[in-house]
Each structure stands twice: as C-alpha cells, then as structure tokens.
Image (tube, rainbow, N blue to C red; front, side, top):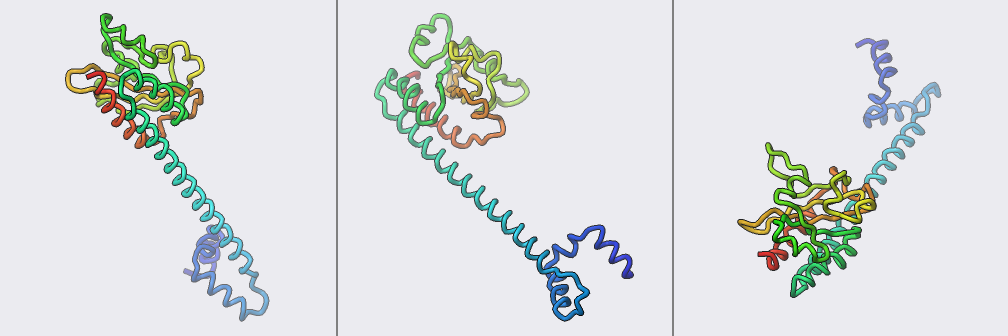
Length: 226
C-alpha cells in the first residue's frame, strides 16, 4: 500500500490510529525526536483516555446501582414472605396480604382472584378476594391456546381491569399478574398487584423475585383453600 492510500485510509477512519495503543506510542515517540512539524498527539491521547475513564466510571456506577436495587428488592420479598407465613387463620392471611405485604412491596393494592361458581361466590365477600367466572383467569391474562400460559405477566392495565380492581380501577395503571397452582383438581387462581404508577410493572422487567414470592404465596394459600 503506497503512502497516499495509507493517508486516505487514516483520514477516512482516524480511529484506526487513535484506538491503536502501539501506533499512538510510536507517534508520541516520534514527536519527542522530531523537528517540531509533528502535531502534538499527547493532548489527543489524554482526552481519549479521560473519555474512556469516564465511560468506565459510569458503567461502574450503573452496575453498583443495579446490584443495590436487586439486594433491596430481595430483602423486600423476604420480608413479605415472612408476613404471609405468620398468620394462623385465613382472615389473618388475607389481612397480611392486603396490609403489610402491600406496604412492604410498595404496591397500591393486592388481590387474590379465584375462579368461583355462583354457589361459591360467598367467599368473595372477604376483603382482598375477587371472584372470577370459570375460565376467568385465562380470559383476564389473555392466554394463547397455542402456547403455555405465562406464570408472571407485567403490563399496564387495560379495559378489563374493573373485573379485578373494582372501585379502584381508575387509579390503578399497571399490574402484576401471578398465576397460582392451588393443587390438582383445583381451579385457576392468580395473585394480582396493582400500582398507580404506569411504569411500575412493564413487560421488559425481570420476574425472578416475583417468581419466588409467587411460589411461597401459593404454598401458603393452599393451607386455607385446599
């Protein structure tokens, strides 16, 4: 490759030189022994290194913040699990679900949605329980017949939210839907968190902690509904 081609290549993409440590060191060394006609590259090199250092510091801060947020979330879930394990009767369980658990997880409302026949609807009078018709869980979540239903669904609330949140529908703007397995032969059920913050629950968020909480919750609620 002749000099003109090399010059054109560098002018077209200066990063070929600036990102190559060996080339930069050779140029700086050449400047130290030059006759003053070589442009000072030390300033350029320092600026680029400072830029990279800034990017690394920002990445470091982001990683630390994410780790702290994850630790804080884990501690919240653990405290909420302890609350649902403590009650000795169903009324106490529902009181813990709608009170301390909602406060710990900083959600505006918590609902236990059960598929009930008309003859079973009396149980829905208890605070925190919502009665859905048979097949109502799949209908509310929007399950597809050609795929397994999702265990956890995070999304903004839609026009059907009144079926779960009732009189609170207008102030609830996002929801977490957690399917519950109440045992063989039992109908579908789900635990629902509602938040007035539209961004609180979104499809692109992780669900690992909610998966853990759902497993603990369904094992606890089986004691009362089995």
